[in-house]
Image 1: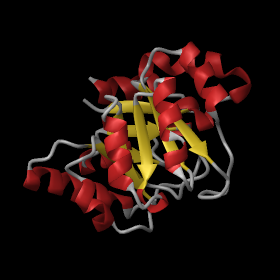
Image 2 (image 1 turned 135 degrees about the horizontal axis):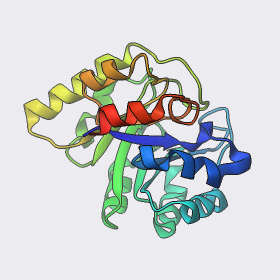
Image 3 (image 1 turned 90 degrees about the vertical axis):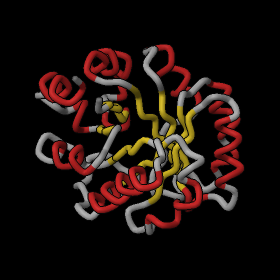
Length: 213
């Protein structure tokens, strides 16, 4: 079954609790983007917002670290009780250490990479992670157009998973909407991370029913 992850970057932050409750019946988890204004040209949510979100929902929370020094944040996020931590492989020299640190606490560890980063850079950690996040836009802002070449990465990850008998999940984040969702699913996605595609979607109930059953 395909999972829907709602990126709160696209929600109405002035009424975040209402926004989460509105879409909660149609999603499976919350995607929480942490940006430092350095690795990506934007500043977003910090720990107090995460604590507030946890009070609004019992859904699993995926913390996506778009920061230059992810090792500074992993321990705190684990203590706050996130269910998954996603780290950009471009941001650390110690990816294996971070993956181990995360998984030792029974928290899921995902690795991600920017659209311009070659997929083979993550081959060495495929057997260690719970999933790979394919960025289908350049990270930093919601509402961008889906980068079509991302489909090649999704298909390759699905092929590797089959060929090597691995069981990692494939998540996709960026530009997914009613028009391209079937193509993304057909390519091999397991988790669809959507901002505008969830919070600004007039057809969310039907879309959720179609792909989550």
